[in-house]
Image (tube, one colour):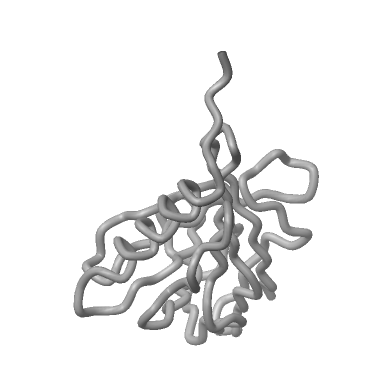
Length: 139
């Protein structure tokens, strides 16, 4: 027998994720790394995501800029932390066709340049599998 998750249940799971991200008194962030070196930090809005619809949760208030990046490098992973600084979600970033969680045509992050998070959508499939669609502009 194949397990299947209903749309309302998927939405409830995603809304729970959003509630966890919004827990705390500081700022939730999406940080782009080269291994363990932070390249760009994108501060999320006080309510990081909108309400989940079926199996998708869309990041609010995009695009988000990251200014003052002082380290150059090649993006290869991301981490979302809650307003309390707890890790919530992490994944890989790679070039187009790489099979990374988020694929982007440019991976090079230049120091002291403005980087942009254009979109981020978290998905839950009917089988319960997580997926993500993200878009960055790295310069």
